[in-house]
Length: 533
Image (tube, rainbow, N blue to C red; front, side, top):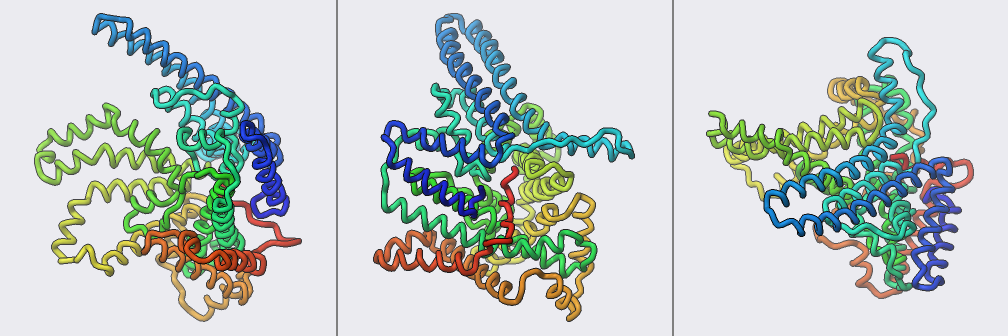
């Protein structure tokens, strides 16, 4: 029951109507029922894993929350300062064991289901023969998303930032909430949970804005992403049959397709929530206008970046061994220089960024190519931080006006180039083929009429479809450019117009999606890229 299916639209309409017709006190139960039905319909066999994560996290949270309070009272009653400190450490260690058991269980399930076959395949490859058979393992729908979200919740309780939810079924709603189970965003408990449990009244303004956001998502998914992926699939099925020019075109198509697909799913999810009255966190902020690779990742999959920063980046950066490396650099003769001082200061942060991106890489999939993806982005970010003074000196030496439009445009194009090279690791079958694709893109460019004919022959998109795709991408670009330059959402601009014009725009959008979207009998709609994460 995907977002683009008629059955989902019927399910959604019925769920929203039932929500607003239900007594206020129990409206959250409608969301729970709808979420469990949606998940069971999509992944009945995977339901047991969702249940295990929900139960284990719920009880770990309750135990940790109770121990937090009890331990505070125990420590408070101790008068001796040294004894108080000693007891505090002992009690913290006991709480840590509870947290660790919960993390091992749930991340263990994730690693077992998502990465065991990858480990087996790696061992077999290293040994030179099929030593161990591959297993037929189920990957539950949205396992990475609900696992990360649940573990963030229990870590926050351990750190004393949250009180555990006492009602198991309310907590189950937080874990399984259907608009975000497919591909996020990864929400923090203190941002989302209270909105799920509080009753929301019907609001015409929320309905209109939610429909606008959903429609924009359907435009990106059905008109752009599902059309672009057809050409992409042809090239990636056997990339060795094509020269670097065709592969470069496929990369550019993927750049559009990935963003349109992923952001579309998030827009539809956020639009559904907005109709109900729930404000879900933003996950994209026009990433292709980023001027640095750091800025790009602050704009792309924002909720994942926030999770990584909070639970991996900061804890790793303050580890004693990591901090000691910075201190050793600072105390060395190199550390006495101006540049050495900079390196000593930013090295722990830079190393943390590299570790985070290695985790992000493997989060994307069980394949060594994703390690390449993480390494590519992590090393660029690491060295961009370490070499920042060098770049600033070069800019000054060349008398470049950093505030000029030309320099800003250069930075955007440079960042986009880095991102597109990184996308090779996404579309290639494996790590070695990723390197081969990069080689072909840079050293096998053939700009001839024969290449154009090859592209026309292999493309499953006819001439009219190509025109529609180009116009749709231009619309996406113009809308994004307006939002980037004005800082205003297009929906806000539409809201300022008379209501007949508002609904005329909505109606026009529906007509465009219905007339030019990819759907219908005999068409197998492409699953959202991040649906199996």
